[in-house]
Image (cartoon, rainbow, N blue to C red; front, side, top):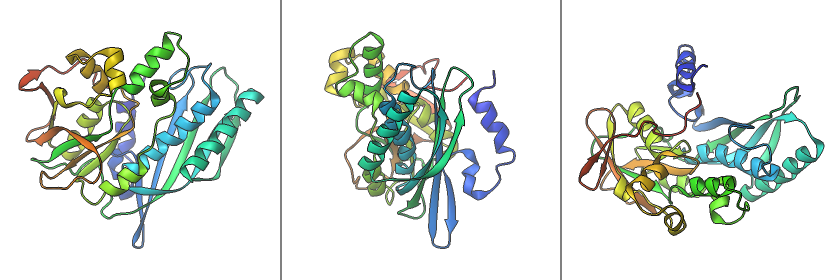
Length: 305
């Protein structure tokens, strides 16, 4: 089966427009006069991103929030979205539509259009394109991290992992840990506040370690992360403890939708965030736990295979 990375590398051969950013970012940036239109598209597939028995309203929320999270990482203000929807069971479709309406209302985002298609198989695939306008120039990218910069992450990591595991074990889909997985929060205000001061920024959707490695690759520098500094919530610690293994799992699972960014050591950070590492010479990702080097895990985060 084709891997995600190999297929994207294939596309890079002809995605030559500057707006595509070399397919090294989560968005396209289309300059229109003095303004910049930010465009992103994310998909969710049944059996990959959500289970067949998932609450359709939760699926709608997550589909919207994951796209808006990409806009947040560029400091953009949302304009609206286009929905690609695979039709199926009437009750499921209606519940999804009601959930999407509530999510759009929560984020004050307009539904502008889209397309529908009949489902001839047994699994659904859904897509959403989100449009936004940049609030700062230059628009933050993954590729600006400079040697000596500090690496920060907003919020805490691992709650979505804990929520998924609890639901997988048969617990009710309620509570803050389940919400972290089912209904992530797009940090739009944080992204807009950070855009003027960051050197690079992206959201953490596939895991801190994998996304940091992607930032290092795009920036052609190295990134060192101190696992002892990875921020964990009290709920996560109460469920999974505060061991090195637990921190490693929180840093490599994904679905956090926090903002990962680099900034000068002299920068005044405009939002609550935790310093988890630094940009160093060389390339790739290195780990430590305090002052002790740590070997990279076999899997840094979530990748489609």
